[in-house]
Image (cartoon, rainbow, N blue to C red; front, side, top):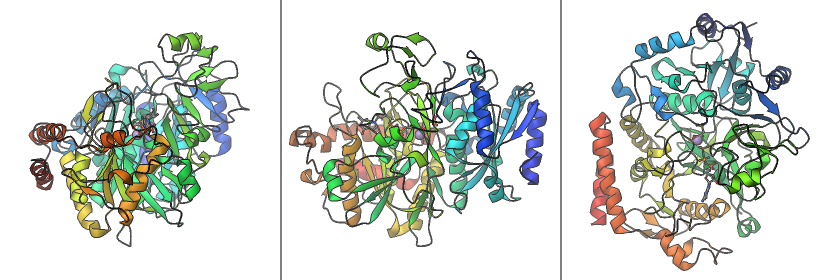
Length: 603
Ligand code: GTP
Ligand code: SPV
Ligand code: MN
C-alpha cells in the first residue's frame, strides 16, 4: 500500500516500477517494526552474500550492524559522477557532463529489469527538520536494505516527509540500484533541471545514500542558486562562551580533512575551566539562507553522521566515538572476533589478534598491521544518529537554523598556508574560498596526497557551473552586507622538514576558534599582511601546550613566505585562466580583481 496520494510521486514510482520490474514493492514508513524486520532479513542472508549485514555484539554495541562492500566499491567515484544539465555550460569546467537525454538513453537499459527477483524500497525523507521552511523532501528508490538503514540514520525518514510534501511536485527523485556492482558500469548522475538522481552499480556510502552529496550538495547547490540560498560542504558548530552567548561557525574543508573532528571538538582543559562549551549542529553539510533579521542562518539537512572511522578514538574525537556506541552502522572497518566488536587504525594501539580485516579474511591483526597492512579501509566509515552525540546542539532541530558569525575555509597544506588568517571582507573571503587547494584523501578513488584545487571544498559537489557558483557567493555577500559572516582560512596540516604535523590539532583547534570569535567580537587586534589579517603571535593561546608549540613553531605556523605565496598566486592565475575560464567557466571580474590586488600587495 502506498504511503501517499501525491499524484506526482505515484506517477514517478509507477514509471520506476515499470522500468526496474521488482518482484515486490515496499514503502518505507520509518516505523521501528519495519526497520527491525529489515535488519532481521539482511542479517539472515548467507555469509557470502555481498549484501549481507552482521549484528555486532548487542551488549557492547546495541542496535549496531556491520557491512563490508565490494573491494572495488569503497569510496566516491568522481570520474563516474556526472552533472547532466541541459547544456554543457550549465555543468561547467569542474564537472563531467553528458546530454541528459543521451544519459537517460544510456542508463535506462541498465535499469531495465534490474530489480527482477528483488524488492524495491521506496524511501520518503526530509532534509532538515520536517517543520523547517528551509528543508526539502526527497524520495529514494533502492534495492538495498543497507541504503534503507543508512537513510534512516542520515535523514528524517518516513511518512512525515510525505505529509510535509503534500501534493507538491517539489521533491528530488532518487533512483538507486546496486545492479552487479560493476565498476565499469557504475554511474552517479545528477539531472539538476529534472530534480533527479540516478545511481547504479555501487553499494557504498556517498554513491548510494543519495540524500547526501547527490541531493544535499549537487542538486541543492543548483536549487540554492535559483532560490537565493546556499548548499555547502560545511560543518556547523556552536561555541558557548563563558558569558553564555553562543557563536555559530561554519567550516568547509575537503573530504577527510577534519570537519567531523572540528564539529565535535572537546576544548582544552583551560577553556573548559573558563566555561567554554562546543556544540555540534552538523559535521558535513550546511544549507544557508538569509533570515528575517538579515543575518545568514544555517541548518544541517542531515540527521546523522557518515564519518571517517580511522583516526577516531577517545582522545581525538570522543564525541564521534560515543555517537557510534548504539544504533550505528559500520562499513569496511575490521572485526574483533573475540567479542564481535569493531576496530580500525588509530582506535587504539592494540589491533585484535583474532581479527577479520575489511575485505573479510581472518588474520592475526597484530602481525597484519606490523607488516604494514591496513585492517580497516582508510575510507571505512560509521553511520551514527545525531541524537547519540553527547555534544549535539540544543538548536539541532530548530527549524529556523542558527545565525552564522564566521565561515572558515581550510585544507591539507604541508606548507604555504598559515594556521589561520582572516579575509579583508566577504569578496576577498570568496576569493580565498575559490583558492582552496588540498592534498587528496581516500574519500574518493584515485591517488592520495596530490595537491588539487578544491574551491570552497566543493569541487566534487558543485551541481552547476563553478563560475556561476562564485558569482552566487559574491551576490550573497552583497545581499548580507555588513551582516555577512566574517571569512577565515585555517590549516591544521602544516608540516616540518620530516613530514610531521607541527600543530597539535583536534581539541587544540579551539585555540584558533577562540581567535576567530574574538575577531568577530572585535576584541582582538591583528596584523594586516598581504594575504589578510594574521594573529599577533601572542594572541593564539598556547597555555598548556607551550612545550609543543614553542614561539619558534608559532612563527612557522603564522609565517607568510613571500616566495611561496608568489608561486601560489601564479598557480591561481593559471587555474582561473586555464582550468576555469578557458574551459567554459566565467570567473567573475571581482575575483580576478582580488587576485590582482593580492599580486600587487605581495610586490
Ligand atoms: P568527510 O566525512 O570525508 O567529509 O571528512 P571530514 O572533513 O569530516 O574529516 P574527518 O573529521 O573525519 O577527519 C579526517 C581525517 O583527518 C581523520 O583521519 C582525522 O584523524 C584527521 N584530522 C582531523 N582533524 C585533524 C587535525 O586537527 N589535525 C590532524 N593532523 N589531523 C586531523
Ligand atoms: C565525503 O567524501 O566528503 C564524505 C563521504 O562525506 S561521502 O558520503 O562518501 O561523500
Ligand atoms: Mn564530506
